Amino acid sequence: MQKTINIQNKKARFQYEILDKYTAGIVLTGTEIKSIRNSKASIAESFCEFNDNNELFVINMTIEEYLYGTYYNHKPKAERKLLLNKKELKKLQKEVQNTGLTIIPLRLFINEKGYAKLDIALAKGKKLYDKRETIKDRENKVRLDRIKKSY
Image (cartoon, rainbow, N blue to C red; front, side, top):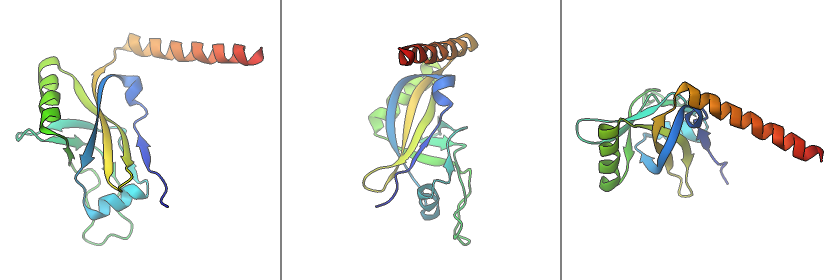
């Protein structure tokens, strides 16, 4: 049995307010999927964008080169196409164009069938005061848990 792959964008929930979530497939080459299965990928600085043909691409996602790949190896920061239904793509594109929201990847994982999937979210950037409030709430929760634990 293979180990589960679960690569997360930990800063996304702190920097953005998540409005809507989707699960998208990714178009990958052979060496890319092998690197992902070895947990050699990062989505920390990545985002999603539409091209001229109304196709959604993930940009700035890093998948390290496969160690045993020859000249067939892939580029680490290449743009990779995301696979969604037409209805979902139209809805996302409308939201991005009209309201100025952004699409960010939250989690890269491999499903039961062995396919690489990307959880993406329609998100709105947080202001500085929102981030401070998030930190304050987190610290208050930790203090409360400590008090509860002592009793």
